[in-house]
Length: 153
Image (cartoon, rainbow, N blue to C red):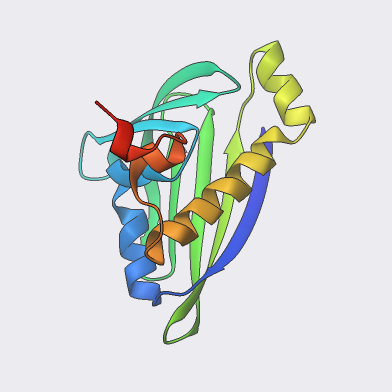
């Protein structure tokens, strides 16, 4: 299983940062590889992701949920995806967000992308988008996909 880690400091209180991450359906607004997350139960979700151009779907279970501290999840049927996001208050208005993701590349393209650390670059960029989003910058999927919302039909 490939592992990537990244962290960023955001200008927002830990409660607001944590609450944003618990809105799993909104992850596609700043996570470039996540196309869709749908809640399917109290602690289960269905994910649609695109890694190195390959679309994958899986179900996941929340394995740990500690308010204002961390969220962890893992795919249910097979070892495909897992992660933890930690929230560390720096002071009343700043929070460090630390992400650890694990995923199992299958295709040649996915394995090549992992070897070239493209997944690391993606998560670093995703965290920068999250920072912009939570601090009041660009919002929504259109910003993630590089489209100008004024020109959308």
